[in-house]
Structures are given as C-alpha cells and as structure tokens.
Length: 369
Image (cartoon, rainbow, N blue to C red; front, side, top):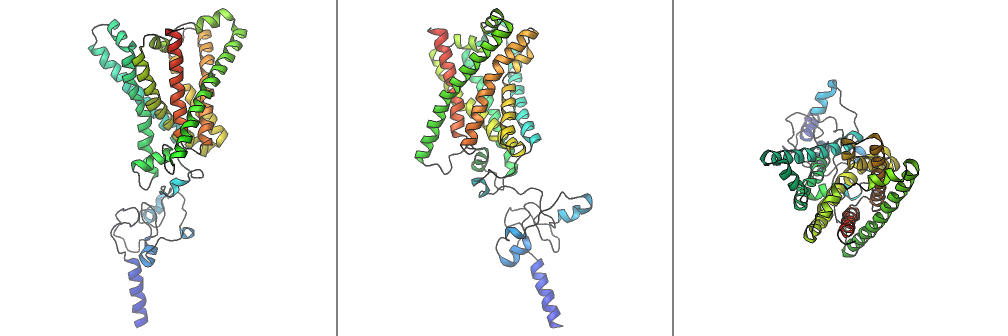
C-alpha cells in the first residue's frame, strides 16, 4: 500500500509543474493535468520539471499538421508546434534552415511594393488637391529636391520584411531581425568589415562595366533587327531620369548620391536579396532562386514601360533595352550575396555605389560634356 502511495506521489510531482509560464518562451501554461509540451514553443515541460534542464534534441517529437480530431491534444501541449522558431544559436548558421515559402517570399515582396506605391500615390494625390495648377504640380514633381525627399518612401521596402521576419524568431528583437535578413556586422572585426566594404566598392565598378557592356550589346542586336533610325530615336528620347539629372545642381546630386547609398541600395537589397532570394533559394534551389529573384527585380523596375506603351514596337524595344541590363546587375548582386554567405554588407554597398556612379556619370554627360 505504501509503495502505491509513493508511486502516486511521484507521478503527481512529475505532472504538477513548478511554474505557471513556460521557462523557455514565457507562454502561459494552460491549467490542465498531465500537460507535457508548451503550446507555443513545444518544449517538453515535464522533462524540464523533472531534470531541470533542456531535453535532448533526439527526444523531441516531430508532428504533422493537427487534424480537427486531434485539436485538443495540440491545444494542451501533447503535440509540438508545426515550425520551431529560430533561436539565437540558429542565426549563426542559416544556410540549411528552412525559412519562408515561395508564396510568402513573392507575396511579401509584392505587398511591400504595393504599399510603397500606395503611399506615393496618396502623397501625389495630396499635392494635386492643394496644387493651384497642373503646371505647378509638374514643376514640383520635376524638382530634384522633391525626388530626393520622396526617396525616403523606399524605406517601406526595408520595414515590411523587417516586421514580417519577427514571426520566425524566438526573440524577435531588432538585432535578431537584422541578422535573419543578413543586414548585420555580427562577428565582423575591423579588418573583415573593411574587406566587405572594399568588395562592395569593387563590384560596384564591375556592375557599371557589366551594365554598359550589356546595354551596348542589346543596342547593337536591336539595331540589326529593327534598324538604326528606330533604335536611335528611342534611345535619344529623354526620360524622367534624364530630365532630373539635367535639372540638378551639385548639392542635389550629392544628396541624391547619399540617398542612393544609404536608403535605396540598403532597402532594395534587404527586400530582394535578404528576404526574397533567401526564401526562393531554399524552396527552388540556388540557380532557380537566383534567376527568379533577378526576373522579379528587373520587372518591378520596368513598371513604367508597361503602363505607358507608345506602340508595340516601342514597347518591345524599350523592354529589351532595359530588361537585360537590370537582369544582369541583379544576377551580379545575387551571386555576390551567395558568395558572401548571405551577408548583405558588401551587396548593399555594391548596389548603392553602382546607383551613385551612374548618377554621377549621367550628370557629367548632361552638364559638362
């Protein structure tokens, strides 16, 4: 009789937890008898209660999606959650970690661009509402300083993935979010940081030369197909960027260069490489992940061509002339991101400095030569 009582007392002590909240993730533990697993992080509460340490990984339970009939078991901790959140230890090696899926990768990227353009449209609508005339509105929009100020909207491309990736982290603080996106200097000493900066600067120059070569090759190819007069007519038509650069002064160019490096390069690389490519590579593999990322990157930069086609011929030529240079620089950035083991420091510098060099060269061509 005494042995049975002792056994019952041992079972009661094992089932009665010492805490009201999970010691790992802090989630409140349901007041249910014999609960074993945390309903949020899935840790074996009974094991910790008995041994006062984390259970070995081999003893954890891998579960399939709970069915309606097993919902009560899932609710009260008899099953582990579907996806374990990343620990700070996991963040040190993300290469083999399964992250967001293809729909999430593409969907959140599209959502970020939609939100950015929605805010830009609302801002433009406000200007139109308070503007005295259409000419006045056009003068405001064409002002280089207005373009510089409106470029801050691109921070949306940084903010959206920054907020979203928190759901994959056990501790979704600022530092861990940045590490997950690859925007971090963690474990970098001074020498390594300088190395990343120099790599970024070097590849920016390579990017400029690559785009010039691809652009020249496409011009030659399309000239053979469509004729010199048609191609030269389309190339010679001044675009929005040409008008902006032509109307800029030294101060606005300097500010625009800073914006390109600090905001544009950083925001776009966090979204396209740190979030989109990182997710697609894990779902599609390195080659297809890189190619699809480059395709999406190129497409979103050519929206204006799709919105305002003058004719079928002009549309096709403009699309080909602009698509392949964007595709080439995106492939370069994607390969650099892969080479740097998914760290964005060198890649962001490459993107920002590449944009800055193109602006400086355009300014020199329009205003000096």
